[in-house]
Image (cartoon, rainbow, N blue to C red; front, side, top):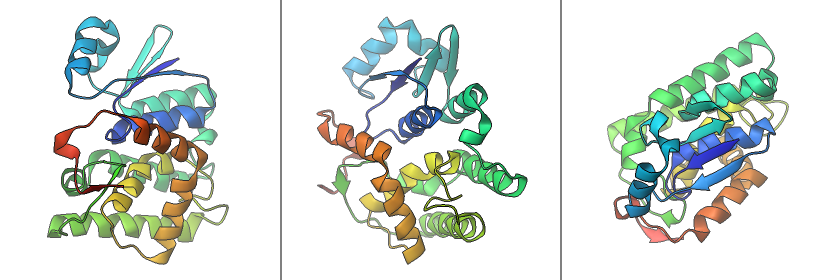
Length: 221
């Protein structure tokens, strides 16, 4: 398998696709390409690998099978290795986890636009009404998942799952912009941040030399 990614410092969707691939336990090759720069445009022109997704990342190639969009990648991998590796086994927590992932995939526009992904930066952000609503909604979902289904470990549904894959970039954004969260949420964020896969991703992001000026906010950590 081959997974094509954008800059690890900036690409939240690439992080989700990569974490899904790690969660699958399957071996995969990765290709990271700088978003929006000359290399990005040249790669899109020269490599037919990008064509099925319209030049977007992440993009997974598995033999003749091509899958784009981070949620589609996660579901494809779940079909290959068994859905229990990604989703809670019981109906009730699985239903909530699926709903949370779908909401993350389609919502929180204020958080995405006002707090762009940037692992290397530290900045403060004005809490507009829309941004505050996104944060409150996310914290409410985290609280409910942890209270009802999180007894088996430090993650949203106990063990690391698809829900954590999809909310990992939120953890990154909350850290970057110094969003104040209650104790239970801080403990969850610490668990995600300290996960070995996240630390591997963060180290790679910090080693990147690429920058995107539109996303470079605040001071470099």
